[in-house]
Image (cartoon, rainbow, N blue to C red; front, side, top):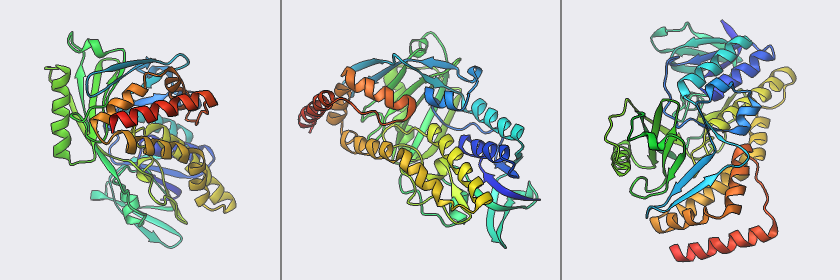
Length: 380
């Protein structure tokens, strides 16, 4: 079977791309390696994403408007979102829903682990391991197959330069764990992560606790064990998860006949490791560019230009934040202290909910700048 576009990877970026393509009448196949896959992910999504993509309420397991930041010395800053919330989703349910929407739009969804992608005439031929799916032919490719993208390797895209190894464990609620059930907690603590952070994300019937590091898988297991001990949790997790997360966009994620979206393109923000929003937005933007390319011969590089124009300031700002404050515990202590400022909280939440760089008044900028300088000097 020959398709206009083969989307490789059935997570949020791939599913959204397939749905947009199919809705426009583009013959599309979505290839997912495991339709029952459970993606290691905190599953936090902002209100703006929920509204834009009309995410059904039943998929939002928790709507949390309270967040705590914890410093290495145990200082806790509690922050309230007055105008929104963080939506908590369970990735296996969320991804399944998005794939079903793509299928409903007309995309063909198949299960198979891609073995090879090769140029063939004016398109590509795709083979799966053990020939689970008969060889597929497609004019164009959208790679949505994660940080270790097979698409990127076979089509010789620039590498993902920086990856964080993340580990998460899920715990059923018990009297000891129930205390964490209504608030997002972020731990900035070098004993839990020397270069990232630890998180506590409540879901409907369980708690997701995790950490990440630029180190090896062995290191993240030690850090995760230490985190659970610090929390005083003695319950056994019912699920352990681990995955690599890219922390920087690839130098290029478009070619003449193929593009990358989501984690495959490296579109996870530094500092906070947020990926679902950028996965879905890149899937949408990439698919829209692909439609224009197929119908009007517009260059696919327009997708990358548009994405960078919209979101490069966010990636740059968070990269600077991580490089400044995540270096040691004294600086992490300073960062949490700055989070106590109400203006900082307001700007942060306004930016997070709708992913727009929200300008502050001159007076607020001066105040925040002064506090940053004070805490940097104190923490250096």
